Image 1 (spheres, rainbow, N blue to C red):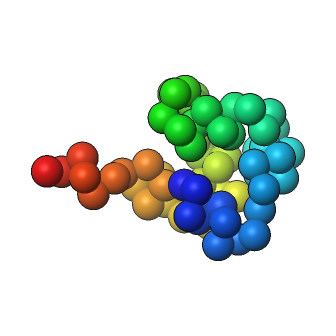
Image 2: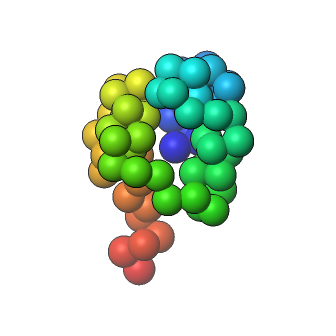
Length: 63
């Protein structure tokens, strides 16, 4: 998620404003310390123009 956010030149604050969350919430999601609601996941994926799989599926999870 961090890479996608940075590719779109968005700060955590800016992404939070777009999806209705705080900068702290975005930071916690990115660090893996917060499990967002499905509604927030969908909002983030729309804001970053990607799928939920693109956003949250990590390749290392498959190993």
